[in-house]
Image (cartoon, rainbow, N blue to C red; front, top):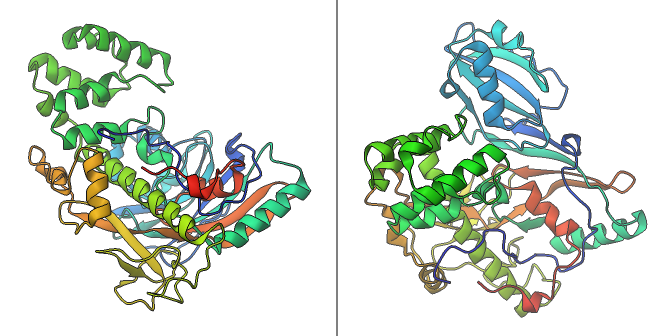
Length: 440
């Protein structure tokens, strides 16, 4: 491999049955997302949430409903209207842009009344109350989806195929990271991360600033291309679009200190730098999981009997056997309870970092990608070093339903799992022979 392959390359399917075709997100209303809070309550679309809240508190918690806004841009616009810096907002997780979504958010420095009085196109506040603490990242059980597919096969065929696929999946699907993890438009986040891990700071910086493939804004594409051609950072400050503020901060630094590409990265927020490293880890996780599913299909055929794994005969994850450094987590919506006992259910794989115990498969994969687990120490930027963590290899499809009259899928997923990944099992019509699947 030697480098960072395209994050969108084919990944193995758990079901080998052909899907119903069609398109996602033809309109925001085709992709409905409702957050499931930590207590199990669902923040439903167009539904007011009334909570007593605290008598006083530093924070205002509020229910944000948005249409065709990313979470970041919606909160930035709210902050602009209320004259509050975007850093004072927090959410449990980001939601899709081309969608109608509802989620819990919080802010400090403004009143509950100010939040409730907002009037922004395609944004509504479905409740607000005082709170003693802010909403924290990951503070949700999951999300409930209603996803309409456009251009699918005729009803009779769709019903048969969806039933067959759902039966074959046995209520689970590969817990791959979705495309959003690798950059919403340019899809180069993991490629930049690989360069950082290899201490190739010049290439990493130029990729972040100048890569224009997939760039949707014409002025941004032109600016990136011109700087790539001229390498004149001082001049670039005169024409680089103002909305590319992170790129401009790096450009300004390089105009002052030519050649200090490592220093230019340190102008970025730590959260942004972490995204590059997390994208690499996500890419490696996807490749390893795809490889293991392909091998399981070769061993067990098209329909994998979930009772065949002798190490955990009752496990819904028996399709994938434990490997070194892995264990199980219980079958709950948010996967909160992790144990090393086999009476749980879901095999937990590795998000590789410098403390991760790696087996021969993982060592080989890292070597082919030109890195090793120690690369995640990032001695040049230690504040974004990653010890590693775990992630379930498979995820449950909860409360699944398919309405063939409207081609609408409804289900709930744990926090961190991607609906687009679940949907590819049902939509893709050409899944290939599982015995000839891509082998990284």
